[in-house]
Length: 190
Image 1 (cartoon, one colour):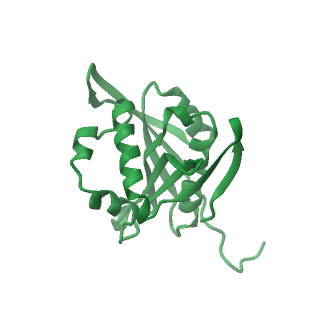
Image 2 (cartoon, rainbow, N blue to C red):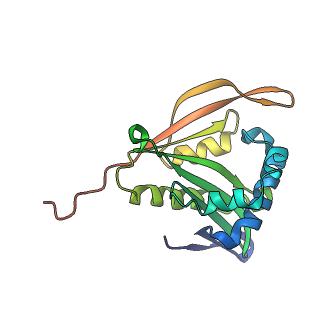
Image 3 (cartoon, rainbow, N blue to C red):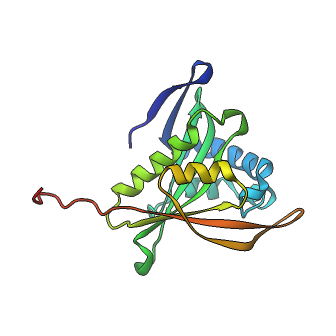
């Protein structure tokens, strides 16, 4: 997958790229920051993920089964955003992909990084044979994220009440999906 570059506010440059093994330490640091500053957005806590060894983070980036792919958004060469695509391994659900771990650091928001990450993830998903649907969940009330997902064709299909326990009670999760059209047959008639 090709990297994406664009001019963003304040003449900063960003690129979106699939993360590799060398990115594991910065990916871990960014996600631990994400779990701390956006605790309501994730089902994992900073404490439980901090206990994971670097090998756990590396396995997410470089999954030997090819079921997990992580994209990063780099702003002036610093990792400031990420999203993970997970593909199902079970035969009855191999037609599905799921997006998790979507995060852009607060100081880097508003530059198109979230959209770029999602477009890269959707591009990878569209390239994988047999994928027909991609799903995600977003914490209810996160209207900026919901608007971004909807602008890229995601639709709400339900709300899970009491989905995550947070410091002041519970939060619901909005479930969203997007159909992935089948790839055109090679050599077919137009």
